Length: 110
Image (tube, rainbow, N blue to C red; front, side):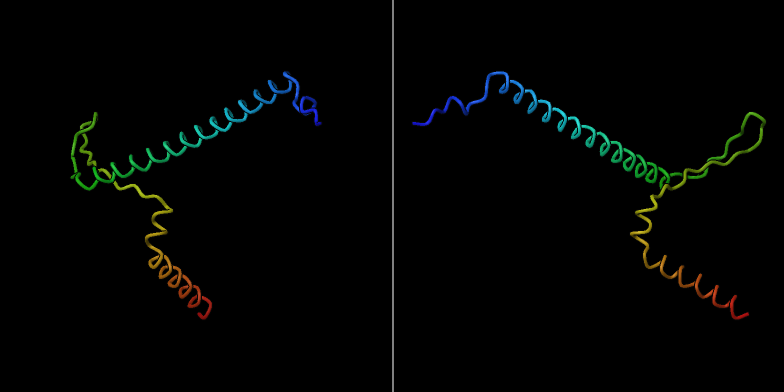
């Protein structure tokens, strides 16, 4: 007959394993929370940029007088993200690169 009691770890070993599993789960949860916070921050930045672009599309030129009595014109401007611009305008960028290459070819020939 096989004695199963010798294969069961001691009480201290079981407690250690339980604490270790708890710590690993806790660290994974902290990592998940930090990833969510970073993603939330990026989403808020994109939402703010889109809202500012919407306000800029609705804005007109405002002319005001500053402290010195000079006329100052103000208008909201659009904000762009380089990554979205390059994704959306690959054809324009390719044409621009071709034009730059043609310009350098013409300079070499002259």
